Length: 59
Image (tube, rainbow, N blue to C red):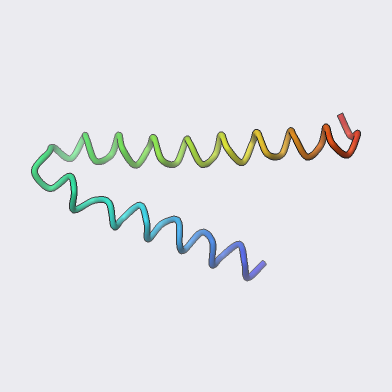
């Protein structure tokens, strides 16, 4: 459980470190970027979960 919290902390810090890049742009652009990052990570984890279940024969 500790590794999950450390990983989530690292992910959030990397997302917030990208915010200064968008200082010149509008806030909507930064929010769209963060939403895209979150959806990409979620999609990757979902695909890895499906792959792992197929590999173990659970699906």
